[in-house]
Amino acid sequence: MRPLVAIPVFNEEHYLGEVLEQTLGYPVDVLAVDDGSTDATPRVLASFPQVRVIRHAQNRGYGAALRTAFDFAIEQGYDVVITMDSDRQHLPNLIPTFLDQIADADIVSGSRYLQNFKEDTAAPAGRMRINGLVTDELNASLRLNITDAFCGFKAYRTSALAKLEIFEDGYGMPLEIWVEAACKRMRVKEIAVPRVYVDMNRSFGVKLDDERARLTYYQEVIDRAFARARARVGCGMTGRRNPRFQETSP
Figure 1 (cartoon, helix red, strand yellow):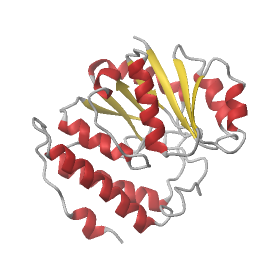
Figure 2: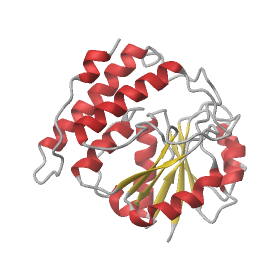
Figure 3: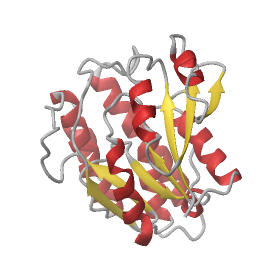
Figure 4: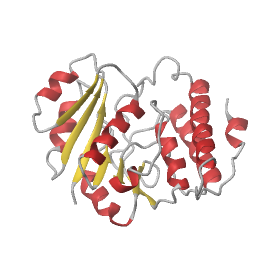
């Protein structure tokens, strides 16, 4: 198995070095996608010559950075891609667990709500509430059985990634992946990971820091992905749209 750890990066000068140092302790190749950082992140990356770096000239968004990583993994012939954030939320010591669990799955997704860990921190209330609403809707609409719709700590078979049709540039891109996984009838499993929030006030950007706006945006991402999947011949998705999301939004 040839694994790649892909880390999307935007202005992470304070945390990135520690994350890379720990990740490089495992037998994996490491790719950082610098999504137009304006702080010292490029200098931190330059101090790790073992890490392959792709840089976006300007900030394009979390989803765009992951799509760049996925394209690289497919083009370079990797078997598995593990995605991790660069802000110390995801613990590199779980890399071997993800590699073990992908043996009988197409996507292995971390869940911060399957069990408790000593490393756990309290989740910001608004984020936890929105995660619960979105997770419930995906389960009802797509007949999934997941507990954490937004965890970015995942492993993908590259052969599965090549089948995904994803377009979203922003933070909502993981929701598109769930719709695609249901459409393509992929084998999905969750594994427990610690719930770690290093920066409780982390911004989603001016527009999406408002919870109502963020929830509306997530709904729009799901709706677009659902419409595309429904229009596709041979899509295996049989779930129905669930109006609960709109009814419970603030």
